Structure formats: structure tokens, C-alpha cells
Image 1 (cartoon, one colour):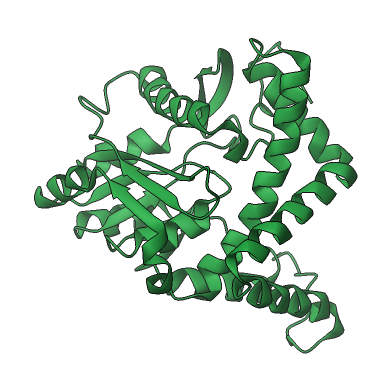
Image 2 (cartoon, rainbow, N blue to C red; image 1 turned 180 degrees about the vertical axis):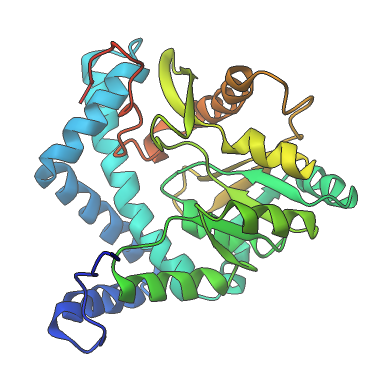
Length: 305
């Protein structure tokens, strides 16, 4: 028996009124002057840091685990900076979803584009590895100024917000692909397309192997290597971050992973985690530490949250 949705069919139903207000707020934030945009994001992040105790605990746990070399005060400050960066990320997401990317071209520099062009020239399609930085959705919009690509995403439970989010992403991407739709990912890559995929979250034991991440065993999804094996496509790591001036951004495509995938699932997962860790260390406050990255533990090990 199909599970009944808790959401009404009509988007005019009062259940959706808060969603409509949220969407309206995102449009408003997207058109704020840049300085006010950054200020608004900072306030959102500061309020979340003060009020979201559960997420603050998750973030502090992640940072304590991953940065033992920092002092307790440095880690505490990094937690706060993470919330502020992710608050700004919400406003950046609104900008990416609601504004024409062309109007933001002057804010982005693209490094390493030759790696992606060379990978495309092979005619096999390309799998791009992204990272869940707070700038992710704005990064996707800005990336579309240089290369056409599809994006893999998690559908939202709220049907109205899902429609808004998917339509916004399709303005910049060729297709928005459900993360469970492996067949579609593979088909699009084999057709010669770039598919942007972020493998840095915990998808559970069945979909993962345990591989090192900041010195700890982390459930790391197998799908990256599986897609590469099924398509023969080069795998390009991609970094994207907000620069210290809070007004500009840098996208950097790195050389494709060599001899990837191998016959060793753990070794393949470790290579992906190594890249992600190196990128995070450059801008640790911009990463989505609010996610329970170490939720799934190896058998016999206690939970950390």
C-alpha cells in the first residue's frame, strides 16, 4: 500500500502558506544589495548558532572529531563561523535559484577549466565530484556560465518547495536527477553529458564502505566508483568557495582521478575522501558540518552524536 502524503494536493491550502512565505523571502533576499545580502546571511547564521542546539551539538561533535589539533577555543570559534557561513549560504542559494547567473559573472573566477574540456573531448561524458559547501547551489549556477551540466539531488518532501527548487535548478542545469535514479545518471553520462554529483554525505551502511575521513572511519558511498566503472567516464574533482572578500567566488576543476576506479572499493572511497578532506581544510567554515557525517558507525563502535 502506497504511503499517503501528509501534504494536500492544492498549493493554495493553508498548509503551504509558510512555504509560500519562505519562497517569497528567498526572492526578496536574492535581490538585496550584496552588502545587505551578506549581513542578512550573517544574522541568520548567528541566530541559528544561538537557537539550534541540536545542530550546534552535531557541528561541534564533527569539528571536535576532525580537528583535534585545534584548541578547544579554536574549535568553538569554528563552530560559530560555520553557522554564519551556512547562514550566508542560504542567501547565496536564494541568489542562485532566483537570479540570472549571467548577472553574477563578474563575481566568479574559474581555474582548471582545461581539465574539464579535455575530459569532455574524450566523448565519454564526465562525472564531476562536488562537495557540500554552503556555496553549493550558487556554485552550480555560476558553473553553468562555463559548462552545461546535470545535477544529482535529493528531492524535497514538501511538494511545493520541491517544485520551486527543481524549477530553479533546471534554469541552470540540463537535468535535475534524483539521487536514487542510477539508470538516468548513467544514461546521461553515456550521452556525453557532465553530471555533477556530491558523494560526501552518510547514506547508510548498505550503500557504503568505511573509509578514512579526517582520521576516522566514515560510511562512504560506493556509487562514485560504480558510475565511473559503468560509464568509463573520467572523474573530475571540483572545488568551489567564497573568497575572503565575501563578494567573489572561485571554481576550480582539478585533473581527473588517475587509475580510477580500481578493484578495491575501500581504496576508491579513500581517494574521494582524501580530495574532499583537502578541499575542506582550505575553507573549513564553509563546509556543511551540520550534517551527521559520522552517523553510521562500523559494527561494534558506539555512536558519536
